[in-house]
Length: 463
Figure 1 (cartoon, rainbow, N blue to C red):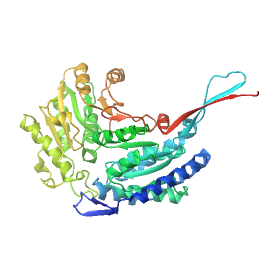
Figure 2 (spheres, rainbow, N blue to C red; figure 1 turned 90 degrees about the vertical axis):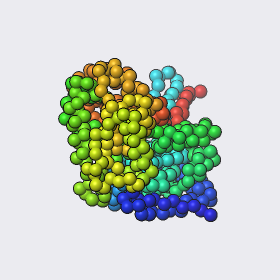
Figure 3 (cartoon, rainbow, N blue to C red; figure 1 turned 60 degrees about the vertical axis):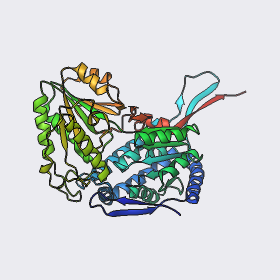
């Protein structure tokens, strides 16, 4: 019997979407179509591929209001913020299409008389994209669009929490005239997804999700020696230096910690503040947290929605309770947020002080609207604490000294280093992580490297 998935909306706990899981025959036919269609697509001139994909982006953006509302209902982000994901999708997609001709161009080597030698970037075949719910389009676009631009076929498995997002992709590509089979979405169980990886039907896996999920994907891929791109989350730190613009730092870091209810792989989860500015910074951050409006995310006046499910909110509640029991102080009274209550996904933002790295809230990924703040006495102490983590996705510093920012950043184990901003992906820069934050690289011209393979041409001219 074919299973089903249910998207339980965190807005009110009702069933928002149900879909049948793909059966083995459906999966087999989809993979075979992708293989055949992908071969034809790879032979299609790049200019034609880019034209079709550009039309698909146009169609996707035109459907933006409906897509934004679906994001809100599927995973709970306020409708005041969901349209921003459509804008971010467009920014990344158009950038990756614009740089494709140069990024995919043949690599010429030094000339040798009588020979023409170059390296060509060949598509891999079929790219399997496994996308999460927290930013359903901003995570998936990093692979879907450049993989197709490079001449690959794509099979997309979206989270069971956001199944409509995969269908929106399908509709946009069909509207643009993408040849049938070049893009396919499948609703799959985790076991079936791993079976696809080991079964020989795909040639690369792009996975965004948990560390445990990444290990399972890497293990499955290793059985066939195919490549993987893994983005597995973080415990991203920020350092507020003594010379920072405090008002700017407070505003940026409140947004970095609490936007999307803290459900961001590159959200700020721990903050280190120079002792000279510690007290005013904490006062400002608490004031900013108290100003959030927690409630029904379909209300345009709300700017903090529920977490994706009650279990996720309970995990964060547990981290907060553990910290307080150990001596930390919680500075935001949940009573100021009438919608917040036990047994629901609605959770008030929280700022914790008197914390240290023995606490889960400072070492384990929270993925919720809570942040711990510690005072430090120097750049050296900040560097040591920022690096004391199993993760390394992004990190940030607030300072008026660009040279100090670069010097400190050089010492931080991270994929991206920010000065005076956070929680943002610039499509012109490589998106990558270290340690348990994953492996591989997406976005930028370098992002095309993992979606292609080099093929060397060594041609003797004449006999």
